Every structure is written in C-alpha cells, then in structure tokens.
Image 1 (cartoon, rainbow, N blue to C red):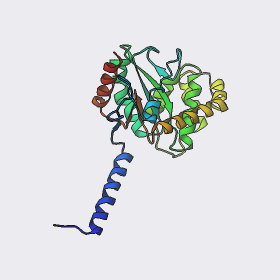
Image 2: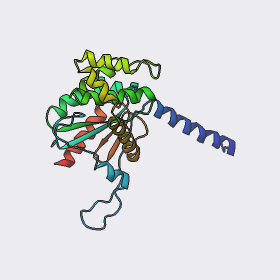
Image 3: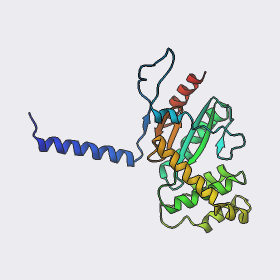
Image 4: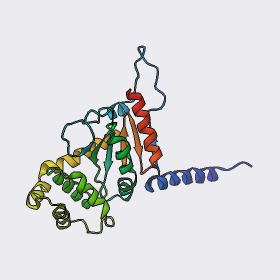
Length: 236
C-alpha cells in the first residue's frame, strides 16, 4: 500500500523523536571512526580530525589526582561526567568498580576524569569542590561520596555548605578546601574540560574516550570490556 507525503512526514518525525528519547534516557552509543579512507602511503591511516583529536586526550601525568592507574598503562579511558547525572552515578557505582578491578589494578588501563558540568549551577559547584578535594589527594573519595549521596537534580541540595560538610566527613582540611573551591584556576579547569569534551563530540554524560572512539551512556559492563580489550589488542 502506498503512503502519502503526510504519512511519510509523520514517520520521519516519529523516528527523530525516538532517537532523542533514547539519547535522553542514556541509551548506549558507541561512536568509532568507521572504515578508514584510502591511505596516501602504505601503512598510513587517515582519520577524521575529531577522531584524531581523541588520540591526544590522555594526560598520562604522574601523580595526577584525577586519574586512577599507571601513567604508562597501555590504554587510557577518559571519562566526562557530571556529579548531578544519575547515569554517571549508575556507571560509577556499578560498572566502574569492576573495570578498576579487572583492568586498572592489573596495570592495563588508566582512567582519567574530565568534568562536563552542564546540568546546572549545582553541577559546577560540585565539580569545583571535587577538584578542591583533589588538591588534598582525595578526589576519588570525594567523587564516591558525591555519587553515593547524590540528591535530586537542581533542587538546591548541593551548596557550598553541603560540600564543605562532605569534605569534613572525609577528614579534609575544610578551610583549605573552601579556599581551593573558590580558586578561579579551578573554575577555569572545569570550563576547559567541558570545552575539550564538546570539541571531541561529547554532548551528554557519561561519555568516554578510548583510543579514537567515543562511548556514550552508562552502558553494560560488556560494552566497556569489549572496547578496552580491543584497544589493548591494538596497543600490543
């Protein structure tokens, strides 16, 4: 049976709406480079500029408080997250611990954190606070506390006072923590991370860069292990 223009238009609009709903719900998406275009010289691989830029993401800085794992680990997984994001919390509390056990503790993978504090002012406050905790080498403990006790988004529960209370509960020097959280250099670092993520194709969180690939969403463990195993095989 043939369809008229109105029917086709409704079908297209419905498809677009479905894709938007899936993205909002945090449905997984893995973006790779696809087939490589022809190379100009034997063995040379030409990548799209954005995919090429993802290869330059790893910091590999010794003593980086926003990283877990050896600086010389064969593979780096960079994460962009927002402390108000429930899907980021899902990843941090369910999937990430197993990835750390299997890959980070084995010296195979390094995880490096990046802020993408785009859900509102409370996201920015939390991101600055976590970096202030990082100056006392307590970023990951603060990261875990923020996700463990994550309140509803943009309800006024994340404040300077609540973040200072979290710092106190972790045994941080609270006066120093408050000064550091207000440091413009920390605010600039949070902004720079988000701008970098946007340039690489991050449009929501959690998002991850592994090699030249962008992984979006709190995907099942198997999705991450497949991506990391593939990156490790390429690194050999």
